[in-house]
Every structure is written in C-alpha cells, then in structure tokens.
Length: 313
Image 1 (cartoon, rainbow, N blue to C red):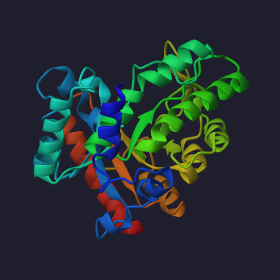
Image 2 (cartoon, rainbow, N blue to C red; image 1 turned 180 degrees about the vertical axis):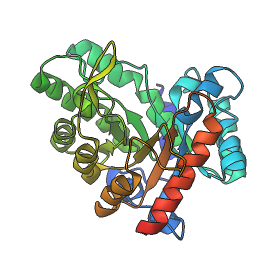
Image 3 (cartoon, rainbow, N blue to C red; image 1 turned 60 degrees about the horizontal axis):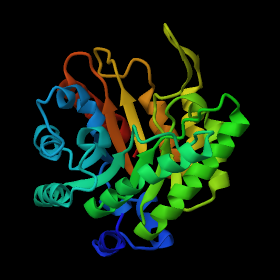
C-alpha cells in the first residue's frame, strides 16, 4: 500500500480508535458502557448468517447493515470479506459504506477474513504472502471503525508443533503490522489444530501481543472432517472456556431449534455462563445457519441470547 494512503487511514478516525495498541486494547475487551441495560453483553449480527441470501444476489454487502437494523433490531454488524472481496482498497465504496452505517447509527464491529492464504502455512514464503494479503483488510477495518479483523490460524502441517510455530510467526507478523492502526487480530477456532482450545490458547500466549486474541465460536470445534462429516470433535464447552481469557469477540453459533426455542446442539445457558465467568462484556455475534429461512434463524438466535442473557445478567 502507498504510504500516503496508509497514513491517511491510520490518522482518520483517531477519535474512534487510538493509534497505539495499548490504548486500543480496552476497546476490544470491554463494552460495558455500550451494553444493553438488561444484558451483560451486546448483540451483533455476523454477515455469514445471511450467506445464502448474499451469495444469491438478493442482498448486497452495502445493504446488509440496514437489514440488520430494520429487520432484526440489531445495530452492530460483523462483515465477511467474501461479500466485498474486491472492495478492500476501493475508497469510494468504503466511504459510502461508512456513511450509510453512520447515518443508521450502526457500529461496525469487525471483518471476518477468508480466502487470503494460510497464516500458519508451513512454507515461509506462502505464509508471508498470506500475511501481506491481510494488510488491506487491516486498513479497511480501520477506515470503517471496526475494532478487529477475524483471521484463521489453519495449519498446513500435520505436525501440531510445526503448525504452532508457523501460526505464531504468521500472527506475530500480522499483529505487528496492525499495531499502528489499533486493529485487533483475533483468531477463531475454525478447523484443524485451531479447534483445539489448548493449542490455540498456547499460540496466542506465545504471540504475546495485546492486540492478538481469540474469537471463540460456540460450534466450530471439529478437528478432523471426513466424508461423513466431523470425525474428531473437541469438547466445545472446554474449548470456549480455554479461549475466553483471550477473547475480543464471541460467535454465537446456532443451527437447529426445538419447539421451546432452544438450540438443540448447544447449551446456551452453559455457554453464556462460561462467557460471563470470564468477565467478558463485549459483543456476542449471531452466526446462525438455516437450510430454509435465514431471517427466522437469526430471530430465534437473538431471542435465545436475550432470554438466557437476562437470566444471567
């Protein structure tokens, strides 16, 4: 990126995020002043909850924030880069998106990054390329007023120690780049070794940078997949508990619900108790999945979060 553009992005929005990593760190961890009065956390909507609608072209990334507010009463959004993949360096597009969210009173929370290479690739040259591919998203996140980008630490090596070494290197390089922007680099449990809570927690501890943390996902704990689905799954409650000390975001996965509105595969009371016990007061992002009605799944997940959240708050 040109230095002039980098300087512009770093300096634009200083009122939203301090340019030093240390001054930005509290914004990632604590949103007490912004929390809903009857909940210990604040609800955001992950764009992936509407992935079928977006992939079909019935909704665009630019329209997503308005839908979050108008259809679901949610005023904080988590973007997915796949839905504006060619716009990270398009200043006109980002200005329009920022203007729309500002007019709507929407908080831009983070951008989830996929398809930019493996930050834990065992090949150093490929790993460095992947790190550099993320730079533009750090800059875009800064411009939009997000606090973080969500990244993956999927290791290409079959050896957990080699994978860990590569992950530490890739995340350290990217976090070093992101520090002047005050943008967090947060890792989701997203398959392979990264879905092992002990492995990922150790990676974050060894990176040892305030802006590098985790995004615990309630459901992404499949370590090994096979032709018939997940063949090896990590205990999701143990995993979330292990990742929460480093959490700068939380992803509330949901899929199927019973007639009482409870998620059939995840004990939300147990999960949110773990979140609360960790002292977390930030955003919990709805990341629902549905084979039929995405809007309905989002509403069910929001209702469940509010119901359980009130009991625990």
